[in-house]
Image (cartoon, rainbow, N blue to C red; front, side):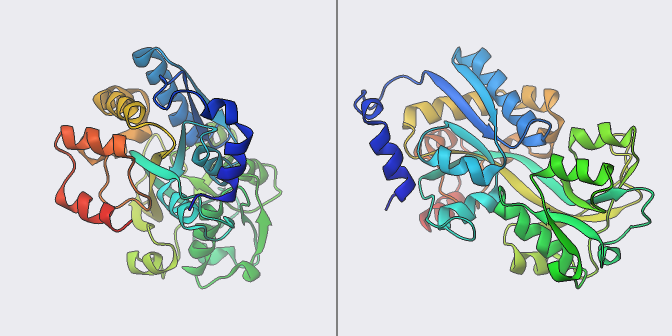
Length: 328
C-alpha cells in the first residue's frame, strides 16, 4: 500500500501523471545532506556525471537530512537520493520518525562505506566514549533518524544513555562541527572522511573519539542492524585520527522510487557503474567500494527492477542477491 504522502503528491500532480508512462527522463535531481557534507559531495559528483554522459540536466539538492528527502524521492519529487542503508530501511518499514511506510523506495547500489564516530576539539582531553559522561553531546538529529539511533548506540557502547550526557539537538553533521568549534558542544558525530573535518582541523585541531569498550559487531547488530565496527588508522589525510581508533561503519546507498521507469533507472545505473573508476578517481569516498561490490547483497530495501536488469546483464546479480530480494 502506498503512503498517504504519496497519494497526496499524486493528487497534486495530476497533469504530470497524465503524461506518457514511458516519457523520456528530462532531468535528474539528487537529494543530499547539506552543502559541505560528504553526501552533498557524492551527489554533486553523480549529477556531474549524469549531466556529461547522458546530456540530462542533473543537480544535487541539499536538504536538512535524508529523513526530509527520502519521502520526496518516494513520491517522485526527486529522482534519486543519497541515504544510509539504515535510514532507507527505517523509512521503508515506517519506523521511528516515519509515521507511515515510505515503501516506494528502491535501491540502485552502494557507493560509500561510511566510517562514523564522535569528534571533539583536541584540547578537551576527551579520548574515549566513556569520557563523554556529563558532557554536551550533539546527537538528537530530527532530520536524520537513523543517525540519531546510531548516536545513542555509540553512547551505549560506553555504558551511557542520553540521560548521562547533555544530549543536544543538532541540525546535521555540519551544524555539529560548528557547535564544537564554537564551544557550544563538547562532542558531535561525524563521518570521519568529511572534507569539512580536514578544513576545520587546520584552524581548530580536532580528535576522533574512540568507540566504547562494549562496541562489537554483535552489539551494534542488535542495536542498529546494518552497523558494524572498524579501526580507523591515522593518515596524512585524516590528521584528526590519533592512533588506531575503533569507530563504527555502515553502507551508503543511492536510492530511487518505484515510480521511476525501469528504462530510466537502467540508464542511470549503467552510467554510474560503467564510470565507477572515474568516480573513484574524482571522489575518494567512493574508493571504499569496489566496482563489483556496488550491488550489495543485502540492502534494507528492494532493488529497482531497472537496476536488477542491469546487474543481471553484467553478471553481478547472484543467487544470494535473488534470495535476499525475494524476502521483500
